[in-house]
Image (tube, rainbow, N blue to C red; front, side, top):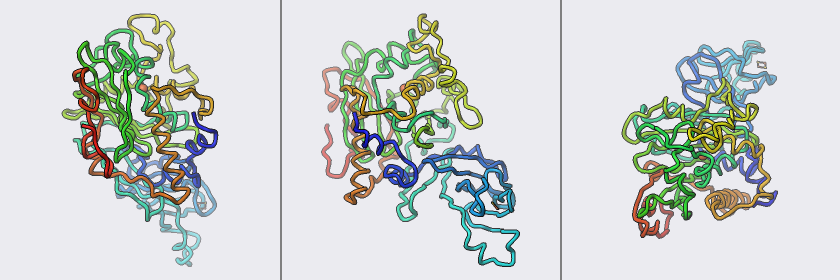
Length: 429
Ligand code: FES
Ligand SMILES: [Fe+2]
């Protein structure tokens, strides 16, 4: 449970809000590279409640800038992208990818006037088919976070971005929730899946340790990237399944996987306070990823604005008959990712956390909220610098998961790797 004040602090990320200021100190995935063609159509993209547009210029450089033209405010989305710049359709003012004004056709006699004009723009970096940006003050720009999957060959990695119709916090909390897999994602019968692939579009097989039982034990450790959330479930009569979920400050996660499974990474970027860009990266550790199988099991088809075609308006395609048969699943909803969207969007755009009832199984969510709120308050009071991510540690981080004797504690069987400990922290071993 959170007070109304803390819930407000947690969920509001527009310009000038405390959480918005904090989020702007981290690198944000914004668009997929293939959304932008050289001299092609610009793309609208709202991030942290700011209306922006992106375009790729003649030389292939990407610009990400405010949507409103600094002359009189017409949308630059309708502009003409040619000759290394984007020209506003209203009076022809032209801007390059750095936001410099390069032409004002009606003011050619006064170059000084033009030199004073800038359109607000943000730096970008393209990695693994994704365009990332940093929206904070230049002097506070952190090093780029080099996540593990960025070091894999291109065809080992796939990514999708989807517009999710609720606040980022409730979407991210779903990723830190071990227990939901045993219900929301449960298929009624065993699922035929390819090597390394967790589920079909119906869900996860009932004998998988994530589903067979909710984890019997959970724990959370502090790390140098955020939180390591441990879940211990029953693997067999003699073994436990030891899982981990990583929460990487402030809005990235690695959901749980077992060794041999393909991996998954998420980012939850507020579009505004009522919707989220949910980024899903799937990666294989040692072979090309099966794009088709993973796309189908997620079950999400989006329109040109990245909104789901099967959604709240169509009851997420819920089929009540499907729930009743052995060939069906717990929800009657097809698509493991749509199941998550249905669970989080039907809470409403922003959950009133003063009315919820958290149980012991919600421990990772409590830790994540506490860290975000503690950071934002400490910064507000001028007591602390923001949490810094260390690329050297991120390079080796992903969710592992093992079977081991059920006589062992998780500290014995599945300790934190030393490179993830915080300065001065003792690691269980
Ligand atoms: S409003 Fe864009 S050039 Fe005038
Ligand atoms: Fe889920």
